[in-house]
Length: 220
Image (cartoon, rainbow, N blue to C red; front, side, top):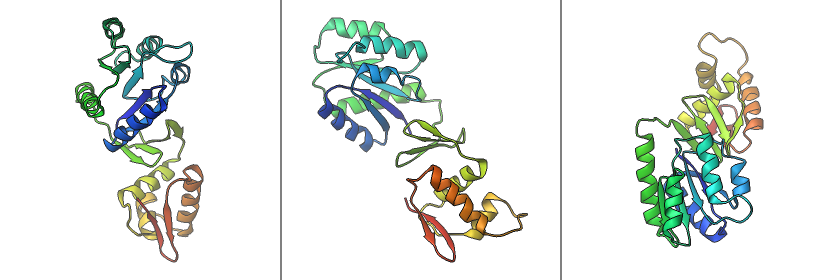
């Protein structure tokens, strides 16, 4: 799943844009000024959408420079209410990939986003699973909550993936033991309860239903 950063001080527009991004299956985060956005340019975003005219001391131009200094290859779409050639030229010269004048059509923006992402990441396999506020990177065995890394042990991660692979299915403790610990495990099946308790403490928003006397089910 692609993760997109939106820098837009018009809150109504930012909210609407967020709804369109969500409907298209993208993960996103909104920043309402350049100062907040500049503090998080190291986050793992695949695309930035930013307004040139931002409140505060960090303009859209400043932000493009900072982003490109950190990650020269990341694509950027910038917007401006002024619709002046100088904005477009300066933005493109600084390394942005596309430009839209406000007010813009949301469907057109979604099409441009898809085109840019397809071009920039056509050879990249994004093996991510999104579950609420959580993102699971299956290739790197990492879990995020709103771009913050959640540190899981190997068994906690294996349990999480097993629950996700079998979402909405009832899994017995024996099935979980066989998958997480292997066939050679001998001991109490209560290790499953302890492991799940630790996983829940680190990821309290996962909706795992307890099936008393049997096991667990991840509700998706």
